[in-house]
Amino acid sequence: MKSRILLSIFGMFLLGLFFLASCQSPEVTSAKVYFQQNNIPAAEEQLLIALEKEPANPEVPFLLAVKVYMEQKEWLKAKKYLEKVIEIDPNYVYPIGNVKVDDQLKRLWAEVHTQGANLFNEAIKAILPIEKDSLLNEAAARFQLALDIRDTELATYNGLIKCYYMMQENEKIIGLAEKALNKGLFDEDVMMYYTQVLFDQGEKEKAVTTLNDILAEHHDAIKLQEQRIQFLLNMDRLDEAREIAKQLTLEYPTDVDIMYLLAFIYYKLGDFESAQYEFKKVLIENPDDYQVLHSIANSAFQAEDWYSSEEYARRMVELDPENPAGYQILWKALFNQGRREEAEEYRQIEKSLR
Image (cartoon, rainbow, N blue to C red; front, side, top):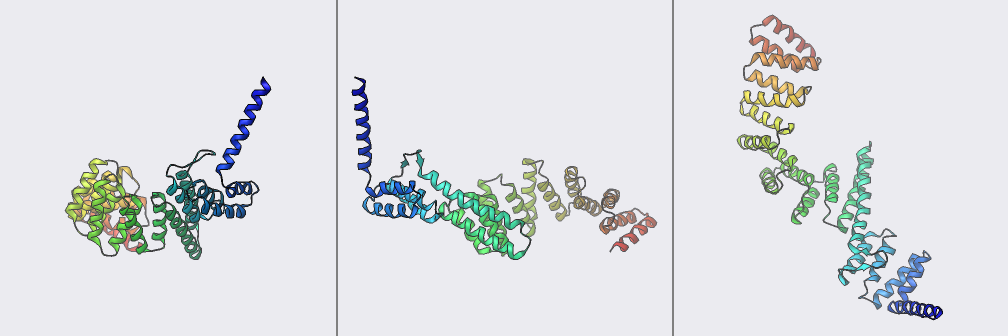
């Protein structure tokens, strides 16, 4: 009895194998044998014949993409045949390992993107300009190829625009950023480089308008918020810059860069007391920041607060005794207090350091 059952099962197994083989063209079967023998060119030849005979079989372009062209690092051919699979059957899953086509496209993109990222990192470290330029060009080419494979990956837009910025390829920066915008994609660095190029090329209103539109949807993009304030400062739209900066200091009370921008706006507006107050808030976070000390000392001097000006000028001198800027504010503050002999002493030190 047992032998009959075993014979029956074995017979069904053989029948199943026959059925599977009969579902495949001989070319696909041959290609799989060639894969086992690591004879990729022969497998490719058989699969291309099979594709003509079985144009509706998604397995054929899948094998061409994954087993042939990805192995040979022919990335665009691999992409072409993976897209062919999707065209035939959008839900196709390769049965051995349940491999999805989209996963292979991601794998393909990741391989090329990583090559670009590695080249970019080498370019950053390169010392010789000719070597840096060569590596940046190679990195940009890899990133562009990665975008040709998957044009919705933000990491690649980010890497490519940094290459273009370092290469001073402004038109390419604009083209790439506008491509991202047209696809509804957002990356803070991409938009920052884009609007900076627009601003530097004289398209200042367009740069600010673009930032306004972006920030309406991405309010928490703090680098772009700061960039917009700096653009407005440059355009002498000080009241507008102040209102934005004041609101941001309420929303981000620990952001030192926003504090500093607000302080600087007050200084530009001639509101030296408010500037001094904001600069002091920055100083709490950066007690040894020479530039902040200089801003406070100068704001106090402009506000005719000679004693505060003296205090912060002395801290400047203590922090950097070889810098004449601290002595200049110090002697002027002392002079306005009527301490003329002491003022003259520091004035002479300032002169000797220039």
